[in-house]
Image (cartoon, rainbow, N blue to C red):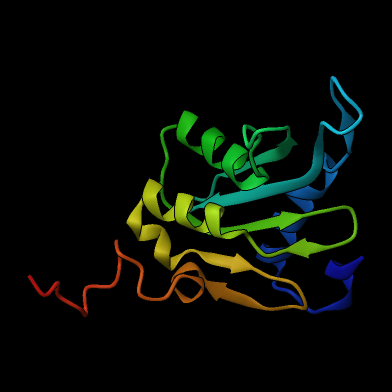
Length: 143
């Protein structure tokens, strides 16, 4: 597994370990509709861990695992993320652009969330979303 090939902090490994048990691909109502191929875990600034899985459906109505984990976090009255990871059976995945935007719109302080990435890397969400309209105030509109 990719996560075992690199040295990670105990906190990062704990988050990976929280998500991985939920990776189990399930076929839904049709052979091309599935869920659980990717799982995500979020650690909030208060230390709570929330998990979720992806659901792949047609017409773009499915959602990523990060969305499901964020919904669980919000259900418990929290919005600020300390760190996040998405995993498949064998890999750690970078969040897609939609997930990055989603997490920033939930709480702009999530720009400082640590994103656990493949190959032992970790970056702040703001580094994955440079010049974001909610967090980059270095520019001013020219009206």
